[in-house]
Length: 247
View (spheres, rainbow, N blue to C red):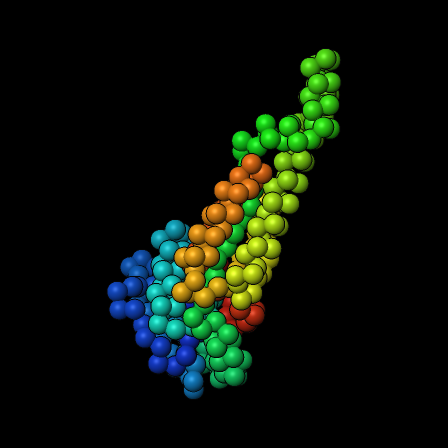
């Protein structure tokens, strides 16, 4: 497409409609096209010469994937995936056609919802009331205040808050798994005790998020939940290697 390669958004079934109102990454936005190969296709645009993880391009990538998913299943690529040329894209599509079709079928009518759990910011009073060890350290610091006593109390509080958040987060995950087709743990995130994604039916996604919010309120003295979605089903697609990450 260009000397800078082919930017790949995802893989769809051949003939999948393209949203006419959205452009791709780059400035000005790249022209989005579909490259059919047998029964599957790649959604692509020219790779910009200065591709970076700018908010503009991150949003363009995700909005396009979400729009595509409205008309059928999509195997999403992570942001920044660039093939050296169109022949590479077509070769990979041809070689993995059956695998792609099976994966597309598994994602039909489904979306991803992500749930992250962090310690509640206002949970200290509840922690002190529930944890005799913390109360003992607090009382000891009050009797003999000092740097070491303060550090011990601070470390104990941080550890206990994280533990309580993790316990509550896992309780929420166990409850939400019953409503999901599948779940997948995400990478570790600083300050986050639970990072879990769920594969849910598109028609059930609003109720799923509402249930997550209800559970968040139920455990609000221990944990803060951040619910994101619907999202492209990144966490439920097996790794593929048709392209290289843009730099």
